[in-house]
Amino acid sequence: MRNKKPRTDNKFFGFMQQLGGTFMLPIAVLSVAGIFLGVGSAFGSDDFLKMCNVAVNSGSWKGLKGFFGFIELIGSFFFDILPLAFCMAIPIGLASDNKGTAAFSAFLAYVATEATINWFLGVLPPEFSDWILNSGGIKASDIKIVKNVFGYPNGMDLNVLGAMIIGIIVWKMHERFQYQKLPSGIAFFSGKRFTPVLCLFVFTAFGLVLTIIWPFICKGLYYFGRALKHLGVFGPGIFILISRLLCPAGLHHMINSMFNYTAVGGTYDLQLLDGTIKTVSGNYYAMKESLANGIPLSPDIAKWLTGSYILPIAFGLPAAGIAMYVTAKPERKAFVKGVIISGIVATAVGGITETIEFLFLFICPWLYIFHAFMVAVGYVVWGAIGASVGVGGDLISFIVYGPLQGIGTKWWLVFPCGVVDAAIYFAVFYFAIKKFNIKTIGREDETQSTKMGAILDTGAKDTNSKKRDKATNSPNYLMAQKILKLLGGWANIAKLENCFSRLRITLKNPLEISDADVKAVGAVGVKTISPTSHQIIVGIQVEDVKQQMIKMKSES
Image (cartoon, rainbow, N blue to C red; front, side):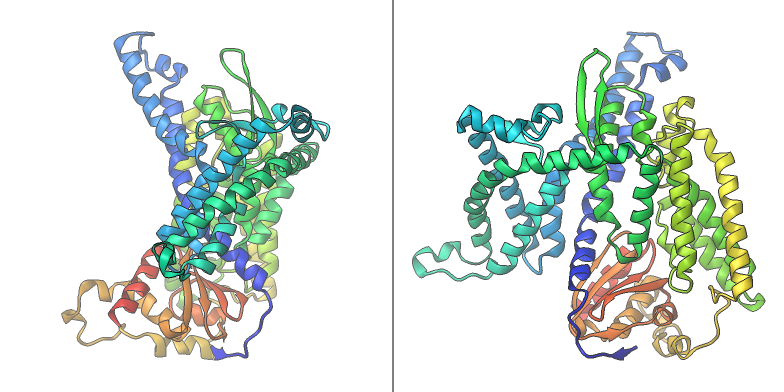
């Protein structure tokens, strides 16, 4: 670790990785909502109740249908407010201070935009509104651009992209005006009150502009999504390959959100049980509407979702971890075993793949490219066999959206496919590590950076540890303590955030931090976006490590 001269490159990527980090709040809620939706639709379906010999229209039948309908409601309503959730999450995650005010401003901005669109469409001359909505080769009604939003019948489906635009604008306004001073006569509106008030004016004007341009943006997304669908089963493979290659930079959430929640991921005409047709854009919305209406999930929708991701998380990456363990030095195998086992548990159960991916990503990037290619192959194969498991990013989700949805999802094909996947991963990793002497975990040479770990290992040999509070001797506390030392203390930290497995850090003064440096303090690896922007991969305990660091700041 050494100081470096300030550089101004990679500012864009630094911002993008911070923006991607803000998505973690709604995505975390969405993952739980998805489980509720899957459980409610599975156990509340007519087929399941009949299989359990529950008499149709009996008291038990109605009671169970009502109960699981309520469970389904818990999961489904969040999908309806997802754009608003993303809009509010962005200023919450990016604001330097007064985050609550930033979130409130985003809420006002989003509703003000929709209210203005609703009003403007109602007063425009019919020929002009017809040109806005129905030009470009497709009618707005065909892809449901105009919809009821918060009780406004002529609102527009801004989807996650529109929400992101509003959220970013609100954040910039909040940072600019949260300390604004006004003349004494209107001083009451100074400071943090100024941005919400300003949003009422700015976003009514923004809504006027958006009314005219948003239908054309939506149609562009629609045509792009339709072009991808013409690629057949290879479309999802190309999408996930790009997503996985963007993952080390923390930018994969951007492309994932576009595919999952906008027309880029496709526009689907769903035939409901009563025979009516409902048009839905975005893969997750199509899945939500299918399950909420008791319709089996179509393989055409499922192939874009994460059902096939069970292959790398439950078979491929664990096999790669085993290969790294087998090829480790004998005297290091005990240590490697603990790292690999915890990584496999985090990957398979929690779907947090970085705990294994970052064991080889920076040591041998072409192994990561192989891994990304194998994930893409899994998507292609999953689509080709017609499997319709909606979500498989972790074991719990796979069970909910696979076995619990019935044999028709073809969930059982994961076993033959998974065995082949694991065999290929193990063979490639084992051969590459041995043939090219790749210094994976347990094979590395002792370096100055690893020696540095002994210097940083404060608290590990504390003779007064029995007198200290138990929390201050916990592994997470000690790791937080070492990471703070590595970064130069809180005096050098401008911003600290986290996602599922990474600390996202912005520094005041540039530092060069190596992979060996962070491994010496007990972390998995580091991704440097710029000399002042780093992502330290910690694992599933990242939230607690961050809180321990914040606690140290308040105690200092």
